[in-house]
Image (cartoon, rainbow, N blue to C red; front, top):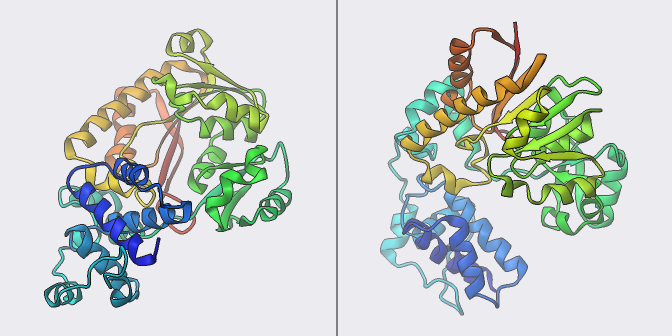
Length: 386
């Protein structure tokens, strides 16, 4: 595909998303109908679509063609070269379209920050002076990070193994064993270092949170909302602990045994009925379902699909998770609560409501990481009974 054809494809996909389709569904449907598109074409089209979705309101919240034109203009690319009508490229812009994309948009603060109007008051209340800067970070692409399985290899050896397959990486400045990918991130899953279990894909902030929780040697640790198992794998690699994984939807953990075998760590999967019989645990880690607002650079469609009612439902679900997990903690043990959200109602608000109802628990550790060049937004708070 030519660069212009990629722009045209992205505009068409965006129109489907504007019409109500989920971004991943729209991209998948286009890829299946476009067998001529190679892997580089699909990656480029996906990048275009996600770049627009990250900045949908500040690009005019228009049709796909106009938002793609504004994106290219914003990024300093030639509209004449890409909207030339040659082959499968978009038709040239009309005089009216050219004037429209060149005219500065009158934007509210929420629109300039690419957030829904209904969410902006909560966003401001949660982040105060950092509200605008944090929102604007989410308009940009996020870096890819890897966790080195240090039971298997050293950081230096992992960097060298990745480089052998053309994947460049450097050590994260603040998170031990974390690598920032600097070259060819799309080659990671084909790299020997990944296939052999020397490294795992995991954001730097998530790695930081797992490294921050207190886990003693020989402890019994439960990843209560395990999902795909990234936290359980990190816990098993970082600590000399017996690690268990549970999820209310067990199918989410279907790949975890293979991932654990690849990393050469032991993780015991528990269904809901088995969790109580295996309790108590010295540490229960609850990475609760959330809005994912700290990760909207990676899933920008979620920012626009979230509704106020869903946020309220998530708050109730998060409180339910903490209440269900607390009895599983051994005397003197730790209850860890985490989200990849930066919204107060999903973080400190949940903790405050829990402590109000269970005053025997107290906070022993709390971190809120905001989205930045060094990782996604993430919240972690550890509690212990008084």
